[in-house]
Image (cartoon, rainbow, N blue to C red; front, side):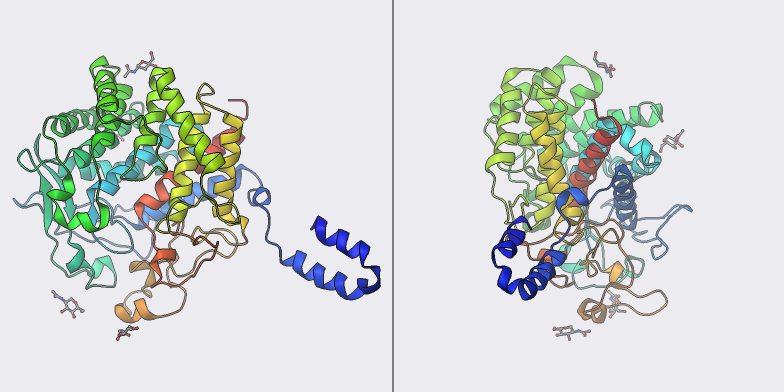
Amino acid sequence: MTASYTICNRLTIVVGFLWFALLGISLATPPSNEEIVEDERDYFEVLERSLLFYEAQRSGRLPKNNRIPWRGDSGLEDRGQNGEDLTGGYYDAGDFVKFGFTMASMTTLLAWGAVSWPQAYEAAGQLDELREAVKWATDYFIKCHVSEDVLYGQVGDFALDHRFWGRPEELNTSRPAFKIDSDHPGSDLAGETAAALAVTSILFRDSNASYSAECLRHAKELYHFANTRRGLYHEVIKGAAQYYESIDYGDELAWAAAWLFRATNESKYLEDAEHHYQHFHLKERPNEFYYNKKVAGVQVIMAQLTEQQEYQNAARAFCDFSVRDQKRTAKGLLYIDKFGTLCHAANVAFICLQAADYPAIGNSEEYRNFARDQIHYILGGTGRSYVVGWGLNPPKQAHHAAASCPDRPAPCGWAEFNRTAPNPQILHGALVSGPDEADRFLDFREDYIYTEVTLDYNAGFTSAVAGLAQLLINPHE
Ligand SMILES: *[C@@H]1O[C@H](CO)[C@@H](O)[C@H](O)[C@H]1NC(C)=O
Ligand SMILES: *[C@@H]1O[C@H](CO)[C@@H](O)[C@H](O)[C@H]1NC(C)=O
Ligand SMILES: *[C@@H]1O[C@H](CO)[C@@H](O)[C@H](O)[C@H]1NC(C)=O
Ligand SMILES: *[C@@H]1O[C@H](CO)[C@@H](O)[C@H](O)[C@H]1NC(C)=O
C-alpha cells in the first residue's frame, strides 16, 4: 500500500486513472494476519467449533446431549475378534475407519493443550466439552485394551469402507477389527495409546479421580507392553500401512515414558525416557512434528520435565529452525508437505508455544509471534478462513461423507460425492488440509489434497489456539 501511494504521488499526470486502479487493488488486499483476531473471544469461538468437529466424528451410541443434529447412533455392531464391544471412539476423517494410532495421537495433543492452558478452555466455557472430547477417545481405548498385552488398533477396513459414501448411520459394510498382541506387537501404537491415557489421567485428576486412576492403570500396562514386546504396528495391522504408517517406534516409547513420568513422578519412567532418547538417537533436529514423527514433542517435554541443557538445546534447535529457516509460502505459511499443510504448520506452532512457556529453551517472544502468524493465516490472514463454518469465506466442500448428505430421509450416496455444491451440513470447526505451495486452495470435495479433514489435522491446531488464548488472558505468564 505504501508503494502504491508513492507511485501515485510521482505520476500526478495520470493520477485520476491510476488512483482508482490502485485503490481497487488495495481494497482487494486481504486483511493482514494481525487484523484477523480482534480479541480472545475469536479464539474462544474457534475452540468451541473445533470441539464440535470432534463431536461430529463420534462413532457409537450418542448421548442425549449430542449437539450435532445431523448425526445419530452408528457403528453399534463394532466388535473384536472374540465379540468384544468396540463401539465408540471417532471416525478418522470423512470416511468411517477407526484408526487407533491417529486417534491416540490426536488425544495426546488435545489433552496436552488442556493440561497446559486450562484457563483458556475455562474462559471459553469449554473445559467440560474438552474433557468430554478427550474421554470419548479414552473410553474407547480402554475398551480396545482387552487384556494386558492385547490392544485393538483398527476397526473397519479401508478398501471395504471406501466403496461406501453416505451417512455413518447407514453404513452397511462389514467392519473387521485388527489387534496387536505379544506375538504380534506394535510399540508405536501401544506407546502412543499409553501416552494418550497418561496425559488424560492428568487432565481428569481433579474432576474425576477414579477415571484418572483407571486411565493411568491402562497407560502403565500399555507402556509395559510397548516396551517389552517391540515391533511396528503397521506390520501387524497391514491395512494401516498405506495410510498411517508409523516409520519407527523409538519416539513413541520415549514419549509414553515421559508422559508417565509427568503423570506419576516415578523416576523409573524418567530413566526409561532418557534411555530411549539416547538409544534411538532422538537428539537430531527433526523437520516437523506429525502423528508419526513425535521427536520434537519428546524434546520439548523432556526439556520441560528435566530442565537439562541437552533437551533445551534440542528443542531450541527445532523451534529456531522452524521459525527462521523452514520453507514458507509467499504469504508466510510454513510449508512442510502438501498433505495436511495447515496441520503441519499448526503442529509446529503448538510445539513452539509449548517451548515458549519455558524461557530457558529459546526466544519465547519470537516463538509466540511465529505461532500467532501461522494460526492467523489459518483463521483468515489471506482473505479466507480454513476452518469450516468460521470466519471469512470458509471452506464449503470439506471432503466428508456425512456432511455431504442432505437432511434425512433424503437418500445419500455417490451422487452427493460428485455434486459440486456446498455440503448441506456444516462441519463446524473442521480444519481442512489447506492450500498448496502457491497459497492456492481449491474448494472441491473430490480434491482431498485441499479439502480433507481428519482428527489429526485439528488436534495441534486446537491446542495452539488454546495457547494463544491463554496468552491474551494472562499476558504476563
Ligand atoms: C449397502 O447399501 C447400498 C445402497 O443402499 C447397496 O447398494 C449395497 O448393496 C449395500 N451393501 C450391503 C453389503 O448390504
Ligand atoms: C467418572 O468417570 C466414570 C467412568 O467413565 C463415570 O462413570 C463417572 O460418572 C465419572 N464421574 C464423574 C463425577 O464425572
Ligand atoms: C510430581 O511432582 C511435581 C513437582 O514436585 C508436583 O507438582 C506434582 O503434583 C507431582 N505429581 C504427582 C502425581 O505426584
Ligand atoms: C460420479 O462421477 C464419476 C466420474 O466423475 C462417474 O463415473 C459416476 O458415475 C458418478 N456417480 C454418480 C452416482 O453420479
